[in-house]
Length: 224
Image (tube, rainbow, N blue to C red; front, side, top):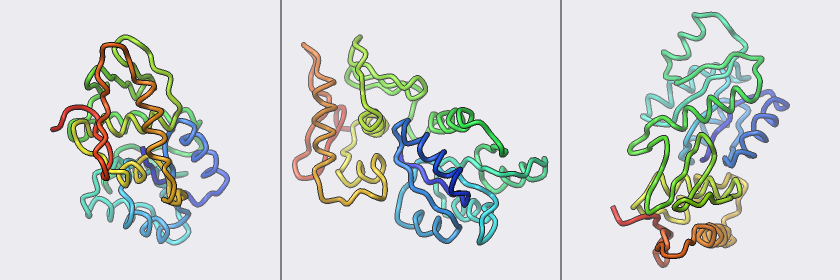
């Protein structure tokens, strides 16, 4: 999934971004409110990790703007403030969860997983169609009764397609949510990863779950 990290502490940002990337997420980073506004204006994020204390303002302001624009992405607030009133202010501004610094990275990762598991449209804790099952919490995938070993990128790709089962996922959709802002958009990276994923999901007697929509993208599962 594609996440936006808004954090002005560069050392902490690198640690968080590296950890979340290792779990298969595509991470964009902004060190200020202005930079975050620019990224949110052009990208559709699946989750925001937002520091309250930023060099050009209060992260609560950004949280309120995101909610005022009806952006549905869950928001995890980070702050060095541990007073009850600060936590209440963050939640009232539209945050879904709150984590006080200093924190252990595994706790942040667990909270991110929990927020991404929350229902969004038809999202389920365990995603399944055409014999393909994926458990985001356990980070496991199966085809039928066979456990399928996937790279972090393949796992993220399969998760996005399962969350949009029956819908056509354009190459642009997949680049937007599975890769990050540094991708140059010129290679066949999506087609290569889909081909690898399709090969790993092959099982005797089972249909290919991924349909190629020529000139557009791919669809996993029957048409909605």
